[in-house]
Amino acid sequence: MATSAFTIGFLVLVGLGLLFAGLIVVLLLALAFSGKPGGKLAAGVGTAFLLTIVVLCGGFFTVGVSRTTVQSPTGIHSYGEVEYGETVQRARVSTQSIPSEITSRSHVHEIAESSHSAFPMNVSTDTSIVNEPSTKDVTASTGKTIGQFAGSIYQEFRNQLKSGKLDLDPSKIIPPGRPSWVEQEPHWGHDQTYYVSVSSGPYDRGMDCRHALNLEIRKSVDQFAVELTGSNDAPKLIGDGLDTIQEAVATETYQEELTPSFGVMHQWHSLLKFDPAIQEQIRQFWYAQQRISRVVYIGTGFLFLLGVMFIFYAGMSLTSDGSRVSPGLVSAGSVAALCGLLAAGVIFVRSFPML
Image 1: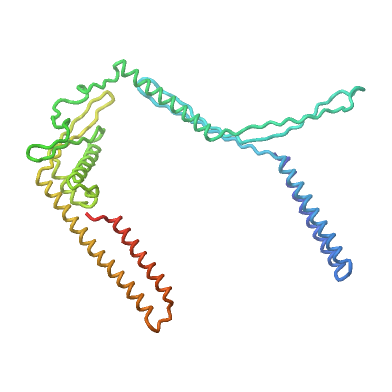
Image 2: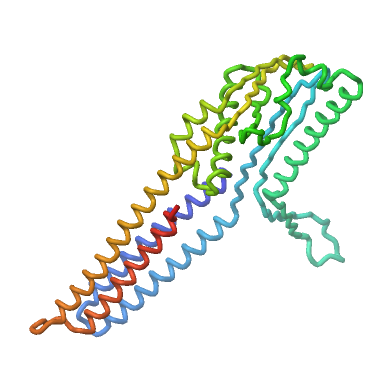
């Protein structure tokens, strides 16, 4: 590498020197033969000389660069260990990028001179090509390693489950005293009350259970509002009105501690009751949104009519006697304005459908 870099630098310096010398020669010839019959011929010869030097320098530089080889392999090795049960799984993920290289090497083998040999030297050229591994191959290798690692963990889980070390019996995990409504399906009662139970799921902290349970309660309230009003946009349009309903529907809450083999987990349950009073409250919220929607549509229609009247009035004013505006231009502008007004109306209706 050092020898190649020195060769390139030397060729560049020689080329610059020759270019400078050629430029001086051309200038001297131009000054010497300026205004004389042979001036144009001298200038042409000097220019040809300068171009020849440029071509030669470019060829030398190309040959010097083509003989250089740059190698920069990069290797990345990583290890991962996961302790699961009584075993420790260790996986290695390695990635190595090897640059593509085409190297030509000339080997000279000496042969003893004899009367039967016309050439005392044997010259042979070997060309070897090393292909760079593609990103697809590296990704496939990494995915295969991760798959083997995950498979070993799953196999260990099955072994512990078969041996009895991992007990998943619900009767041993769930503590006694769980209410019957925790497992019941959503249903309507005899008093037109809708009952649904929600669960937070197991968490290791009580605050996480509270947050997850509140999210599940809000999902149930939104779903009930959609079913009651028949519109998928009801939860978004009612908005904060459903917050008060969320606090009122949660009538019972049960907290329990699960005891699986890997530690204590917390889980919260809540029973939601949508009685006729809450249903009527949701309907009133929805009726209010419908009234607002109708008022907005009436106002928008009035503005649309005003826009149409303004366009016609402007067109009639511009085409009256004494106007210098072309009638064709006024007609084209009126049509464009009406099309724009109609497009705005379509966008409004699609963005804000009437409730």
